[in-house]
Length: 212
Image 1 (spheres, rainbow, N blue to C red):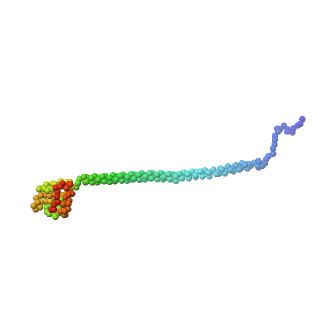
Image 2: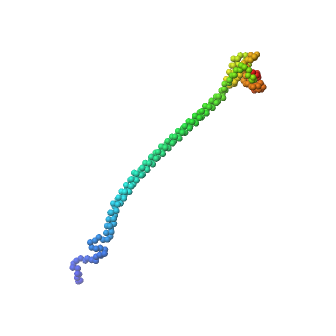
Image 3: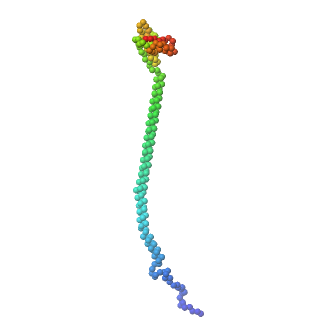
C-alpha cells in the first residue's frame, strides 16, 4: 500500500504569484489609479459646470427682462399706437366723406332752388312798364287802342303791364281828344307801319301806326 506524504492535510493547489498583475505589494493597481484620477477630474469640473450653468441662467433671465420683455412691450405699444392712428384716420375719412356729402347735398339743393326760381320766373312774366307821353317825340308808334278817358287808357296799360307787356300812353295833342295806347315805337313811320302786321295776330286788325 502506497503511502502519501500529505500528513493528513487537505489537498490544495498552489499557483505562483503574478507580480506583474498585482503590481508592487501594498499599492493601488494602475487601472484603479486611472479611474481615481478621472473621477478627481470630474469632481474638479463640477463646480465650474455649475457656475457656467448659473451664468447661462442669469444671462437668459437678464436677456428676457432687459431685451425680450422691453421689445415685447415696445411692440405692444407700437401696435396700440398704430391701431389708434388707424382709428383716427378712419374717423377723419368718415368726417371728410360726411362733409363732402353735405356739401354735395347743399349744392344739389341750391341748384334745385335755382331751377325752381327760374321756372317760377318763366311762369310769371315780368311786370311791364307804362310810359306816359305828353309832348311830341317825333317817333312813330303801333297803336292798339284809343280811349276818351285817360283813366281807361291807364287801366288798359296796367292790365298789359301785369302780363309783362310794356306800353306807351300818348296823351291828346292839338285837335286830337283821344288817349292812345301803343305797344311799340320806331324811329320812322315806315318801320312802325311795317310792324303793324306783326301785331295783328295778337291785338286784332283794328291797330295802326301813328307818328307822335
